[in-house]
Image (tube, rainbow, N blue to C red; front, side):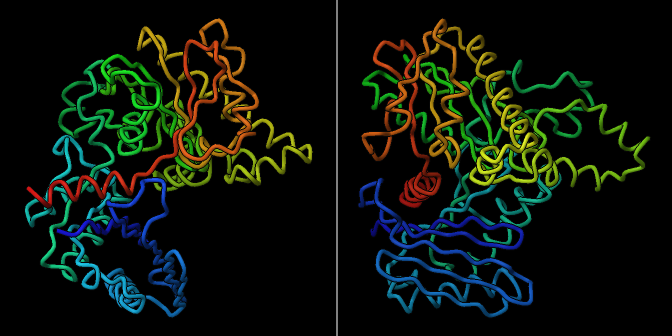
Length: 402
């Protein structure tokens, strides 16, 4: 069988996808990457990128199925269509697996129905994921399709970490618990740490920080998560690009009663108009840094609040783990923002954590995973680039061969 796998991430108005060659070096760019966006708008956009070519289409895209079919046609023009490459499997990112899914699964009609039943837990994400699955299965009916769930890695969280202090009967009736998200990323990067440190996975306690526009942390003991920051939805936990993170639930009642806001308005406020964007008007860390450099106090406050929340969870997770061996930064902000790594790890020498300034600045230009702590730091601090698409592709390939 071939080693080309197609990975699809279908959103409400976009489809991101990659074709990966699993025989290639994991550090290499994907064989092909693509984006279908502005679906349903007057003017759409499809962009495909290979090692030596980029092609685009800016015609309107009526639906996900139209966009995906057109993208497949453009891939064929590059000699990289699913049939040209004999794609061996298709991996689909699915945001919410609820309590049903603890592992990747081969997609059947029954599995699609199960994912559909979880829409109340992820009304913004699972419908779009289902669209991607159904369209891809129609276009590629002879290939195995595999669903990989963001929540699966946290399926086995201890009861003390997964259950809220909510009435038990109500929580169980409505499937309310802490599910956690970004699980594919946390599992991928934490799985690389033992090899980097030359230790057995069972002997490593680590905190992983997936810091991007969406952000989460996980406490992992011996390869298994014991706590995480996100909950029933991706809203809980850290301050994010546009999300509040942890917030007193009483604020919802206050805004409803005193502000006369509807539930939908509060939902939009918390998920799309808060976080760094709501605090400083910028959810891109590069723009936020520019505002800070210009002396914008709101931007500085937003940065400080972001750092404060990360440090709060670092401390909490250190206590949960009892012993800490590694802290791992990943995702767009975690991998690229020198200041965030420096400031979240500042003044922790008494806890065995010491950052090496030159290594943190990457003065030596090291590519890929690297240790940025000082030689005398008993807790190793690392930067490990995430690759959720590769993790999904590997899972899809493995199940396709069973």
